[in-house]
Length: 422
Image 1 (tube, rainbow, N blue to C red):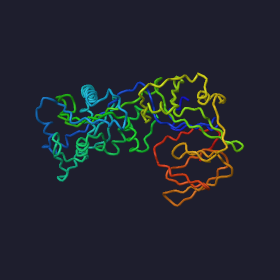
Image 2: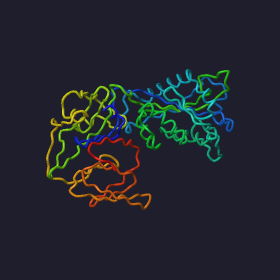
Image 3: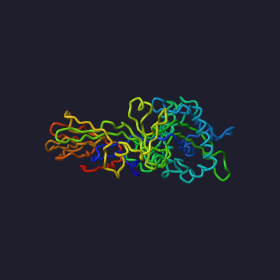
Image 4: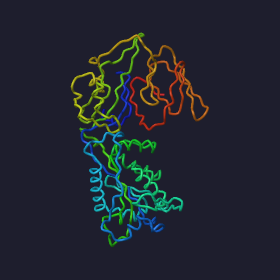
């Protein structure tokens, strides 16, 4: 059970259940802020009269100006009531002041000559990215935002559009820079997470975000230091919540699905299982949601949030669920089982591309068609089994046709007992 949090799908065909990961939960969440620093020196050489370059070149009372604060829509994520625009702004301002004072991004930018990310008290950057900020076109002038008008760089234009639409985003980053940033972020959220698709990873990360601020900095530090030339920059700071990893307060949340078993023409299936469970493999405790009224108290997403703290139960307490989850115990005599002769289906979907063929009265001969070429594969299923179908392939089995599975990011670490995987 120790490695269960690293799995998206867990299947035990001997005991007859499957778990599909929904997210993670903890009553204790950590506020995390990541900062992206966009250097403006080369841009200001090419376009010295833009408002932000003028701001960076003339004496003013402040060396840092907040241009915008964008909040995550509350209908997208259940934001804790303690986080409003003012509190998010204060948290981000406090943290960026700390970073500027203690970590000196101007020094890193001077050496890297590129966009720089600050995640988990470390800097990350690609090779020189100066050309991205030097792209100018007289037809791309933006004058509708009074804070920073007449900026013609492609990256700057995207940042301006983001500000004017009051929308959190990272479109100003290149593909490689965005992937670098996401990899650094997910290393703090889930060390076992691997980025397969950048857009899907960005969509997942967006569900953790509370707010984002954009700052103009005259020196990319709290003040000009004599040893370094002036280094104006923009800072895009993003506040998100994460769960502390490997602690007794962190639970991996799964949807629990009983698997039907056919014997002598009758179907047997567990009837008293909760619909959703949370597992803490460190201190061997679990959470459970059985009734719809309890399920509605929580938002089940990559970061699970609940109005009320769920009750924690020890796995050492004897129950049906402890029998199922205990890998050293084979008995399930405490679980209620229903028997039925009404078997309406032969196949059950566990997750995208993962199917359980459980009612095998005769051999299933299936054809696998690829959507990218004309190749056809054949598989024969003669006993109850788990079948994993690659994405973008159509499967036809006698009187059944399985839908095409999307190529979504999923760690396909499936624990199987007494079954085979195609």
